[in-house]
Length: 342
Image 1 (cartoon, helix red, strand yellow):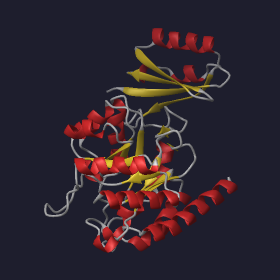
Image 2 (image 1 turned 180 degrees about the vertical axis):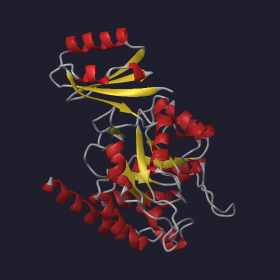
Image 3 (image 1 turned 135 degrees about the vertical axis):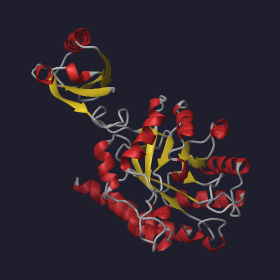
């Protein structure tokens, strides 16, 4: 079985010392070496049968800060190999994972040009930096509204042109990837988290991917799905905690707040939280969003509709523009307070 060993070099290590060290490792052991140069240190990943590698010998070298074997099945998404946070650049003004907080807001489903443009202008005024909206809608019932599909994508692009907000929308099939060429963030929904054919194809693009956690997925399974995308060469992955299925029936799902710091410890990828799908109730969006920010989330994705009682999907969990404005103010106030404390 292929095992990876991680060697973190001291910041004082010179390029010449690093080259001599890697040359010796290659000659002494039957391993491949991947190198990652960070701002503060260099990390080497040894790939192959590392059981014959003498850890004590490596640890004794002057340029070595630490060395450890990696047993987790996910490698590229692992913080041990990539100590610094990944920052996913969406536009000139939006980067997720750089310490700032971004809110993706908009309706569950795009219903008309008037609707999506009106909501986009409203959420932008309230501090949202990205526009979310479903063009293709995976629904539990085959009789429920399935989205406007390609027309919905066109309407999202109109709203982006009107407001300047980057757009986030969900893909359902590998055959649709070409249609999403001008989408700023491609969302993979909970039902498709383990659609490995789709993940592989998204790995061949360089497009940012918002990967939602599956309904009953463990954290490791979630990270392994991210690994599928990254193994294809696409490192622009954003994880989204959207609640998991438990025995509790009062809420739509159960928001796993603990997953935020856990994933940040295990992985370098940014984490966004969806309090709307987690609860299924609009009045719970605010407290869950606040909890997510306090726990270290890099962003939120919140459903906003100008007429929730008549929404074609998920009206019960959607905020009105006025409600979103009030919630947004509290969210950014909390974020600012946390920044002062740190």
